[in-house]
Figure 1: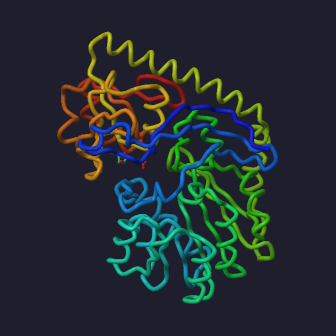
Figure 2 (figure 1 turned 120 degrees about the vertical axis):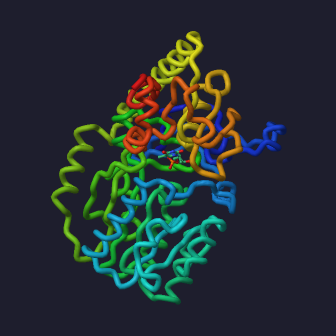
Figure 3 (figure 1 turned 90 degrees about the vertical axis):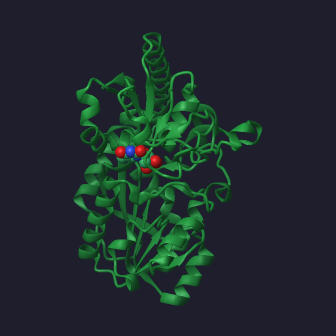
Length: 395
Ligand code: TMP
């Protein structure tokens, strides 16, 4: 049974940045109720209500995974590790975005699946076999006619976005070879609980997985988990290694250690999520008070990174032009647009990150290291960052 534990109010789509023309018609902006529940049987944490993926993954999808050096390095690193460890003859990626992972493979050795047409065009143009389609059993069957079976299926920050997980894992089971491996990376519920990062919840993150939940939900698709590792990307993620029920892989030591940790932190108890919810209410209060205090002192505050996560923070905490002058972001197709729901203008760092800025809210807090080392001059001249993880504070 799914029990609600967190109500974040009404939200726009996290990725629906608006043009100047569009903010003139605010009634046309799509809003939905964002709340989160816990399944007491499978231990799966998920949104209470999902949005139709056809509304989300269109040919206007803004996120470009290769724009972050952190992600580029991470994907190169894991691609090399996976090639060495599993020696796949042919691989496939579900949710290949702009090709940041597949570019580490030979073109004939990997297949890309990406429903956003604008992104699929990029990998197709570069010569990779690309299916501009949603991942389904039908597609898996179609691909199997082309290449029979696949030895490695990789999917980062995608499986947690697909509402029908049963269809997703059944489709994987169709295409995976008998000793093939599925590697999944997604934000981890343990990190969300530890960091109070409620902004991991937005329309695209239908699920925030744990080892316990993943182990439970893949069973009926004939799959099992045999290894896992915690990774730092996207503010704390888990990498799951999954195989067919009958395959050769044995449970690893590091999996057992991580699983025991989940038992210790009561990932399988509703009360854990109830306490989290109380902490989030406090986080909102503290962050708004922090902004209010700075505004009283006439400080100029901007936001650093027009992230999906900050769409959740701004709409939940009601932070908009009342506190922020603008948002800066390096992504060209976000510049000149306005943030979803709160309509704060987004401009380039070249234009906006100057000496007039006193405080910058870390919308892209998951890139804190990268940003801190890049923005030494801002800090040197007295500029300060604000964050809400693990609690609202000035850095
Ligand atoms: P993400 O957390 O959804 O991947 O988005 C990160 C956003 O932050 C993306 O739009 C790019 C932006 N960003 C900057 O503007 N400057 C930076 O230094 C970094 C690391 C990210």
